[in-house]
Image (cartoon, rainbow, N blue to C red):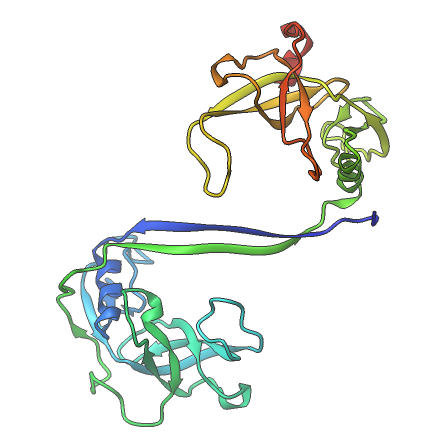
Length: 318
């Protein structure tokens, strides 16, 4: 067992939001190969459009069409694209001020290398082959040395913002990939769990035993190093009934998730309670861990059959 454990972790979920009239028109316009902005109260054209004036916070509704060519205002080279980024080959992240706009739009620029990118260079939109009403309808930008696309004047022109079958909602995947390092205290705790031992650490000042250990006492703030075996039995201090099934979780609803104070511990931990009807789980219920082959932590806690704990024995852990 290494002194420090690490593990790759991914937090991922779809985020869905409804679109107001401004964002709906902007995304629907991209589907129709039209780039829309909105005029602020001081006359500036904001692209991408904002729903509220950044200075006065007033509603903005005056939509205008801008060009599909523009100027790079700043950029950064991306030598190693990540999955689901706009391009699979190295590219530049660029801020582009489209012709007729006063603010810049962030997107990718397809360029052979960083030497081909510069602030002030002219670029144009490369449209995606299939467009659905999302920012990805702009596949990327590409270098452009020719004349401006429409509108030729370089000015924003009024637009009604009305399209057939408008986009009214947006679902965007949110994802965070990172490496988790639990630190010395939790590494020792996880090592104990691998041997089906529940351990905590005692504070040298207040003598409370914290499970799982944090490496420092949350009350006194001093380091903790003394390991203490706790449990394996414990007491349900409080709980909730879960009625919404989580995606990918092979547990039928309703089920109970509880705070469990292990014997000898001064801090309750989380755990699922099973082996008993959900409506019979109660505060003070005595429980014990259930392990499955190959698991590094208890799968759930079940009733021990002991009499319920007296409230005074666990009230300080609520």
